[in-house]
Image (cartoon, rainbow over all chains, first blue to last red; front, top):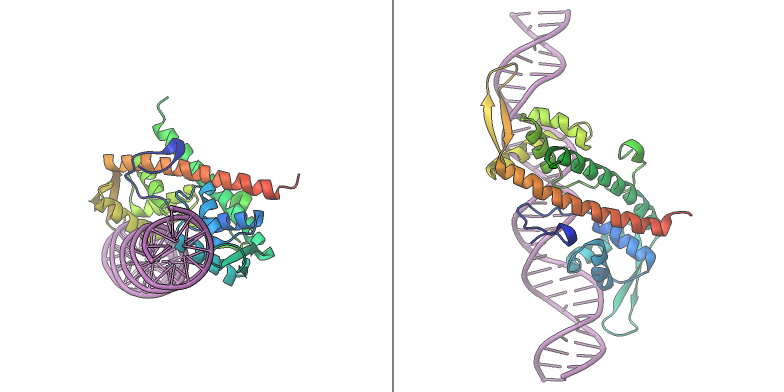
Length: 125
Length: 125
DNA sequence: TCATATATATGTCAATGACATATATAAAGG
DNA sequence: CCTTTATATATGTCATTGACATATATATGA
């Protein structure tokens, strides 16, 4: 089975990977509330990353975003469990959220155009 | 400059690649009318592939789709210019169009959810 | 003490896309 | 006739990305 919600279906095609979609999602979550990677893995479910996002993806993207100055972090040694790195968005990160949202708008338009054209060919009216 | 139409903007983030989006677009075009690669490169503009799609992408995807039985082709030696390969969609290709359209619906939902949440944070009301 | 939950990090491989380049044919213009 | 351009297909190479596996360490609870 593939997909979720109303669109769950037996799948014969490859899953679209939503490439790079994880980055704006992580940034938006961090904008709403500073968090550490382990939390993000879970809250990314809200954006459709089923079963929680892959740890490798999350941590590597966090480090990449930090190298680019989009987020910054500090170690939290206090509290329960092993030390965690608390991430916050920087102003540059917020800029990235804005420009990503424009791309996402574009993509919705393109995908919507595909669907419209798809339905012109296949809808049974 | 990045993007097109209403959403054209000065870009500071990486271009989303619309990974695999080219395949359903090619299949839908071929469903509407059998064509050869060179034509597709041009008509993919309608789906937002600016300046026409990359020849490498188009031809490699055509060969891949043919290997998977989603399209079939025959050489056209007649007519003007060098020999061209005329591609048609197979029933398996049509199945792929349908399941891709479900994925695309999912993606629109996910992207729409991101936008909604983005606007909750940033719209200036 | 042993298993489990929390937390971060890296290794490896395949899929994908971007860009460059190779090839051949035909038409058009000088 | 020769050169340029348009048509047409195909491959080479490299970086990015994602999927999956694995390594590591700390605290908690049974």
